Image (cartoon, rainbow, N blue to C red):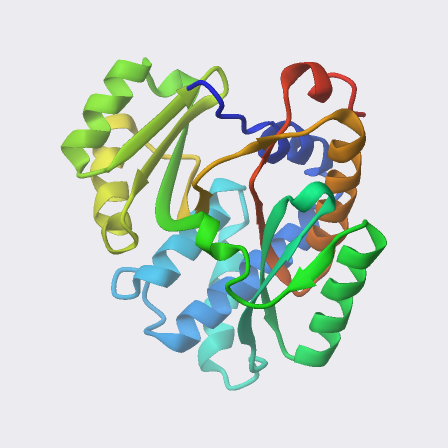
Length: 247
């Protein structure tokens, strides 16, 4: 789809995947433990836990690690985590949403604020940028799942609201409440998805030049390398010619 770029979320992360594999597993395990602690430790009865387990399996997290994370929630030794969202601006006013899970709010807030400052941005108040995003469910598939038309038909039949397809793959969107139902229906039609999760979907995107992209990617790297940060969302788009110049 024109104007739709997943470069920052695909190519960049592929390059970091091995380096951050253990950190990624740690964050996913934390989400599994918290999800299981907040509801039942059974994925079939706990929608949030089901999504967390699916995300873990999508990156080949070992089953025993997943099971340990679930058992930790009922063992009484799980830390008490607080979920918090930070909103701010990177260089050139690019909107960024940071979702964190922490056992020390002061530490996390201080760290996140310092990352924004170091990279030429600034942290804002809650709600300062989220109005420019929609909270939706997202199910992603590789380009091999089928043609854009085939995926569109499967998505509509599954109850999805929108589909974005390009040379990198397919992204299917639905309401927050319908995510599990849509994900299950798509799995029957298209097979196992790459990912199924709740996201902040930008209502519009801003193309950036090389210098801006470098500064923004540095900020995102710093945020994602923080143990307390679970997810980072932004509204910038990196043109192909700029992406080719990024290392």
